[in-house]
Image (cartoon, rainbow, N blue to C red; front, side, top):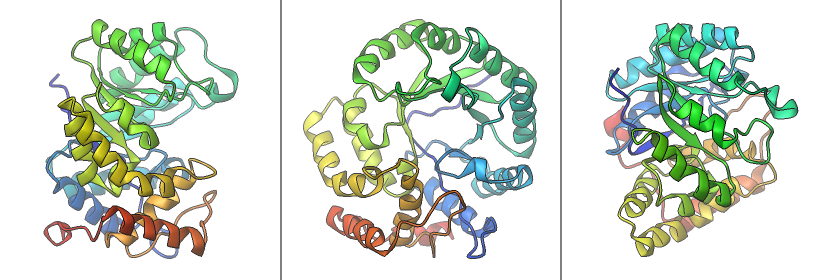
Length: 315
């Protein structure tokens, strides 16, 4: 197996819908082509939280994978969020995603674990079944420390050294654990690619990672790549400069009442940049209202983020 190279930015694109709520394959292909036209974008991670993946039917999910695979034409891997509850269900889901054109799997925890926690060994079995059934290269997804689906260090170490696992998307949002656990993961598997998904806390994690895997990558990929480059160079002054420029957008998109509101805000950001024509969402998401829309648009102006410059090349 040649591992996917994720040492850069991996946006987690939103799913574009038509105004009447159907998946808009033309708009999704347009978004995909724009993102991969930006040097440093290494993969596209679809069907996750930002992509409203669990709000789509199975047929819609598979058709969207196919649309993305055709749009990128092998330029970058397509990574699918695998969210099925049971281990067998998740493995079957992954097999279908691979047939539709996915290369990788962002493996979500069984969502029952969010409420009840997990039994020792269950995550390892989940990843093993997905890899063996589908051949999709797996990304270890570390949930926030405040959830019961958050993996302890021993579980992470087992997963990080398991066949088929090539990276970790870490969103622990607990810097004590970040500074303790990331070095241990690197020690256990030096080839494991460390990806931060701390959309709202990227600055403190930028100095320890190989890449960012974030929904934020939809709306400001150019600046996120600048931040990542500064972090890899251990240039705090430059990283802080990019962070400060992004801060109005970070606040408008992610410092909201619910992190789920960020998906709606991302779509509004893409409208502001001229990539999407409208910000249609699916229930249970709700529109943010005219005031929030104005605040988000004003934040892009404050950050000096204008129309997507490479859009014409993507069409």
